[in-house]
Image 1 (cartoon, rainbow, N blue to C red):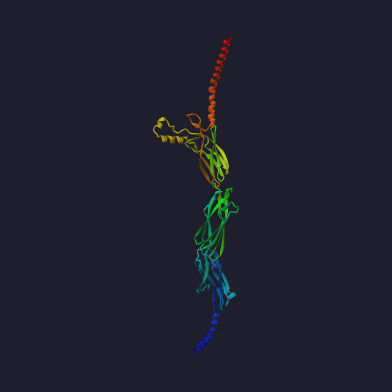
Image 2: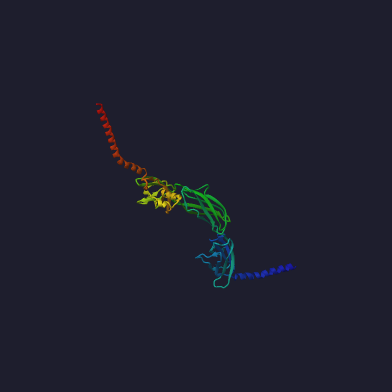
Length: 435
């Protein structure tokens, strides 16, 4: 019986209050704001997200000059040129559902935003009124998945030689990366990996971490010196399974330094010739051969010779007027008395050395001027006994033999004539005795 009384009283109150509530609703403005969606969903750190709100008036009274303000707090920041206070001039009574007003805001998510749910607030009220209400909405934010390919290991490759080349992949975003596939290529096939293909796999790189990928590469031995482009490709997945691809490029220089071989060619008539060959894998530019000042040799005339450019495998001949210097401070008997036998031998060996120092200067294919010093054994022969040595060699010895003939030919002729006269005289005398 008591239960029936309570139910009856409740029904009476509803019947009495409903007209009052309906009348109150019809005579007032009831503004509500709700979040429809966000694009993209989830919002990405460091990028722009568009937020769409629905504004309704569920009251019967018309609402004028309704202000809706988006209140920006970290990790959301404003975009220059965007308006964050929007005014709706008129909201009719019971303007809801499909008839509601849709407003949009664009904001930027901070690049260091924490992955997860972040709040953003809307403040609404009538323009000129001091009464405003605030409501918070949840915005889902994902971390920024971003990787950077840093090529730091080698900038120059020597043609024909194996070179260790290393690429570094760094996660510079704020979300882990997984299932990374890295590959590279040089479109002309001048630079190729050896002992492996050009693709490598990385399972996981955490935020701020790096991974090194090493290759052994060879540049074609016949490659033209210059800058070559490597096309780099990286594919990876974010934690939510989204795939992303990065394409970039790096440059490597093929070329650089070279090497030379210098050998003694010949010596004649006071001229010493040297063979200079480019034995490296790169051409050399503006080559100059120079005989530096040294203890054992003297150069008469120019000490340098300009060759010009010398391609790999090419050689040329350069000549200089070179003589072997006398023993500096020739040791006389007085001087030799005060030194040991070992010192005397060292003195003699130093002055008798026939190793000529040759300096080669050239410009490599990177434009850098370089110097190489070579030691070349020179064949010298004695020119006059007890005098200085010269590089004339056999031609000098032959000259000495020719110079003796004028001295002995006269006496020899005289001797022959005298001997002939004696023989003739003896024959004549023998004939007279027979008669």
